Length: 364
Ligand SMILES: Cc1cc2nc3c(=O)[nH]c(=O)nc-3n(C[C@H](O)[C@H](O)[C@H](O)COP(=O)(O)OP(=O)(O)OC[C@H]3O[C@@H](n4cnc5c(N)ncnc54)[C@H](O)[C@@H]3O)c2cc1C
Image 1: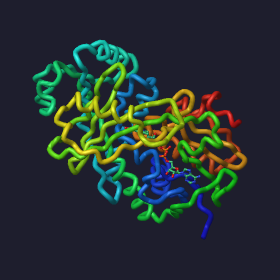
Image 2: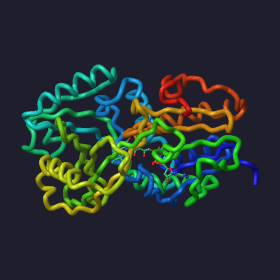
Image 3: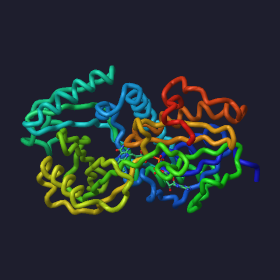
Image 4: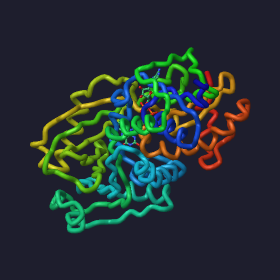
């Protein structure tokens, strides 16, 4: 068999998306993942799957918000091109808060205005909120509505991408862990191992996230709901089959052990405060994983000409929000790197900071 153009190590969210889009662009691709095609060991399996550039503007700078907007535009187009259906909803986010937390809402609005020039935040009174989301009738006096924000069903997405790779004849090596010292045969190797790349990329750290999956038939939310709260900022998302996701904690720790009692109590009590009917929901899963984060909580791309290794990492809590934009950027770089392997990786033109932050790119 001829040597692939690129070998991608790590087929979670980023690696699978990149393998698929690179193969679609005509490159010969091989993918290696330590686990199977379902993807249930990837951080992406645990995630909420939200693509919410406006809601995230509070924790992200304007460039990340623009990247999120680009991804939001790409997701529906990309999902339509998959051979297997993946649930995607872009009915927007509703932000709600308890009366005492009005300051959180004002803070959110001012940060959103400063960081997203295209923000389209709308104020709703109680009646307008009930019209949009009947389950929230009489629950909150007011709300903010962020139209167009979306969520992707992550658990449908990962196997659907594996199906798409099969259709394109991508060489997939499932259940094949690649160690740091190994080099799969290819003109260029791309490391997309997420949090497991810490052994090579010393600046990476884990940010622990806990999440709950409930079965709540009859409780179907039309929008993503976020509770603005100084301590417990949780979200609720309905999924097909009467399921509901409640996420997520964010704890500065590499500890990926099971959900703590505190984490479960925080998520479940905040969800119950938003929707008391959830008291009768059934707990399907309490899940936890660590988000792969660089010191500034932004993604980065770095290149080492010898041994021709491209590393893409640091998606932090924004894997679904940012990966299509990041993949698009990597695909723009690839032809040049394949032609001229010694080329220094210049700052990406569209998102300048992706490849140009000395403090997170140093190889030591
Ligand atoms: C609780 C929680 C909620 C989240 N919610 C959201 C959200 O709503 N929206 C959002 O945008 N982001 C969210 N995220 C973040 C998102 O999940 C991550 O940013 C994203 O999954 C990172 O993608 P990745 O491909 O870099 O890593 P991963 O998805 O973890 O993929 C890495 C892959 O590498 C493979 N691998 C590891 N080591 C090796 C090896 N040695 N050899 C071969 N393969 C290897 C693994 O098997 C895995 O498949 C959430 C995260 C958590 C924990």
